[in-house]
Image 1 (cartoon, rainbow, N blue to C red):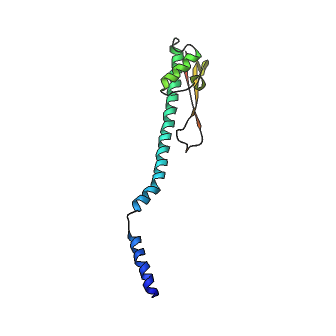
Image 2: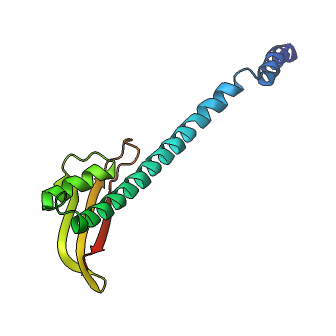
Image 3: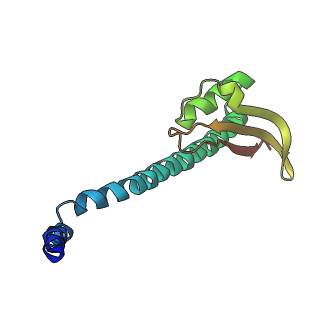
Length: 142
């Protein structure tokens, strides 16, 4: 009698273990969080590299503008606005990001220097820390 009851539970249990209908859903549920996190990390890393490249380009062009184009970059605020405009990024306050300096040492000669310091805002909340991107360029005047 006991054997009959065990057999009655054993056969449906074996059949249930052989079924494969839900395995794709379980595999999908296990891999999606990992893939999404990886994808968001790649996107954020690309944004950081793009912003760093934009800052470098902006300070190089602003230092060159200070040297050769006194009408566009004759004052500190004009140079800051020029750097912000050529960077390709949007800054709420260009004067807080870019700092131009005239008559500084560029190696062995005197030149114009522009530095930038930008606290990078991440789009995702997975990265709870912040980084500050910096760039500087010096263009000789003589």
